[in-house]
Image (cartoon, rainbow, N blue to C red):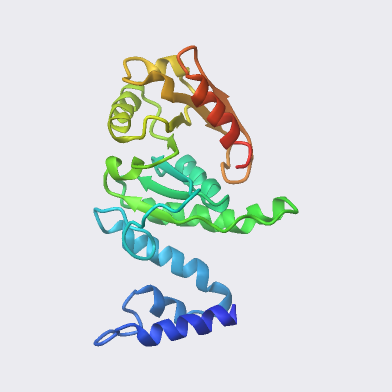
Length: 239
């Protein structure tokens, strides 16, 4: 931790803080004014808050980065308790996550769930977790789902809302991406009705708290493609 702190101090010295106080809010300043043990969480929370103020998709540091080889992306639609739990599970298992929710309170809510997940999840097994993925908040669904491998919908349990969301998702999402629904009340055939690519949609219903319980009900329909089902069956177990 001290080595990382020293490295950040060198970065800080190169950073232009002319005319700024220690409360300017940039990542370097926030980190350098925290005790070693609390820096990571506070910096991440601060960056989440700053990014949520923009209408464009941003990572915690800098603008949207090029995709890396073998990098996996999850798009989360809806940042309530369930959506935030999905975001934490993907992030702590090494996936990069983009999240869309127009509620301005979403960054605080997601940050709180992430904090709980970071405390709890590492103690559940004897194998170290992979490096944490990168979280970003997006102002548009089109930005959120671009290049995504898995799209998890966790919007309110109203079929007309879900259908409207799916229509927007399928307009911009990769054809091979999975759209999983956190629904507990609708069958996949109901979700798929009237959609341009019904075979892309499955029910992926989690158990709460999502970041803690490694269980999900995967429910396909007769319209679900074999490729979609095979990908879902291979992607979910490592999470």
